[in-house]
Amino acid sequence: MRQKKREHPKEKSKIHPRNKNRERYDFKQLIGSSPELEIFVKPNIYGDDSIDFADPAAVKALNKALLQHHYNISNWDIPAGYLCPPVPGRADYIHHIAGFLGKKNDGKIPVGQQIKCLDIGVGASCIYPIIANQEYGWSFIGSDIDPAALDSSKRIILSNPSLKGNIECRLQNNPNDIFFGIIQKDELVDISICNPPFHSSAREAHAGTLRKLHNLNKNRNTEPVLNFGGQNHELWCDGGEIRFVTNMIQQSKMFAANFFCFSTLISKESSLKNVYKSLGQAKVFSVETIPMGQGNKISRIVVWTYLNLEEQKKWKKLRWK
Image (cartoon, rainbow, N blue to C red; front, side):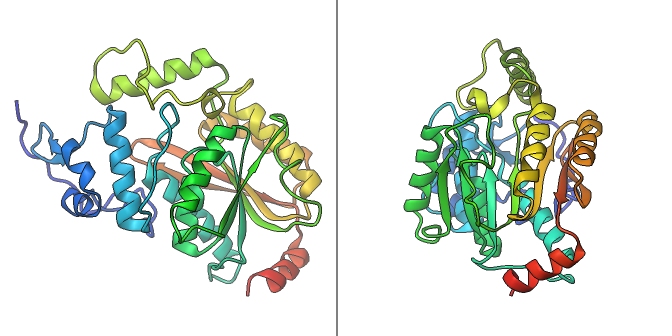
């Protein structure tokens, strides 16, 4: 039964002001950019055009349409069983990081291919490098421990001319390493980004997926739907996000001079205490926490650097033309 039509705000206020996905989805425009989305678009119980967000095929079709419509990416796909990332949330991380760099640069966001970023765990979707390259022209190193995921990202890069030469995929052969084996001795990178696995076990990840599906369709599911399950390394690691980020911080100290700054998403507010403790032990020069909201979900980006103010000034003069 159709419910009374809801009044919707024109913009999603929690989303970053520069995010192209700030307004409600215009499905007519999106279908115009990607006709294959049309079969998934139907009126919801309020009479609004929408898709079934519990249907992986529909979510992937929406992602393809958003990437085509807003970022001029004509060829994008991911293999079955890999996470299908929500484009608006991924774009928010990029815009917040751009704002952070701009704040360090007298209010001017550094743009262009000379700005190099590292995406730790680029995955099969290549989503962060795509958005950052199309929005700000940045170049990327995308690292991952999964050869199949990297192959998928490489296919996306090679099949979209605007991405060629701007994103390089590098395989991390040692799953315990993050920067070792990826960053060369004298290589300079302006910022690293990371969306770490935040579950601490496969069982916890499985339960989290079921909760997500239940919240989407209000039906009890006993098995994750294909493409919502994700690969193990995408969803969980021993010790969860605290262990992963602590390891990242410890290793980042060895690459202090290679990076202007490092960053990571932190999903759980309860993780922050341990993260700040690790950053203090690593003796970083400065730390900043950036709140980020998507719908009812609140997360945060933690950014740190080892460079003092004089070293930061030299870095900007050398690289941020």
